[in-house]
Length: 98
Image 1: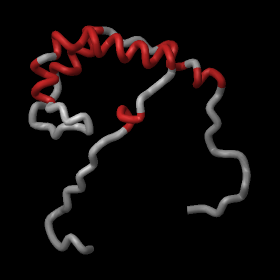
Image 2 (image 1 turned 30 degrees about the horizontal axis):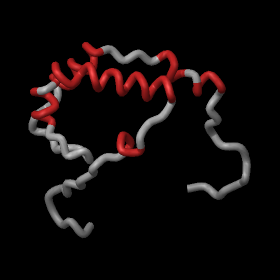
Image 3 (image 1 turned 30 degrees about the vertical axis):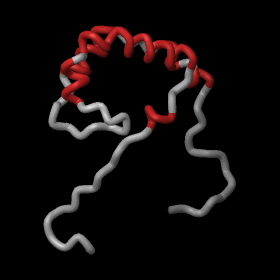
Image 4 (image 1 turned 90 degrees about the vertical axis):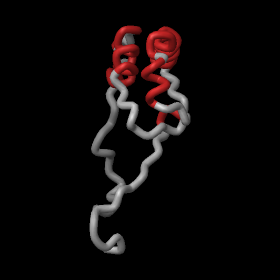
C-alpha cells in the first residue's frame, strides 16, 4: 500500500474509452455458442439458473438474451445483478487457520 498523496489517479479513462461500448457487437450465434459450451458441472450464479438448463435451452433463449445484451450496450446500462458473483473459497489441504 502507498500513502495518499492527493495526486491524480493512475488511470483516467479517455473520452474514447466511454465510446468503446459502441463498437461491441453481440451476435445471436455467439450467445448460443457460449451457452452451448457451458459446463453443466459448474455452480449456479446469483440468478440461481443452473448451467445445464441454460445449455439445454440455448437455441430458444439466445435471441432474447442477444436483444437484451445489445440494448444494454446501446444504453450503457448494466444491471447491478450482472456484476454480482458467488465466490466460494476452497481451502487447500492442511491447517485452514494459517
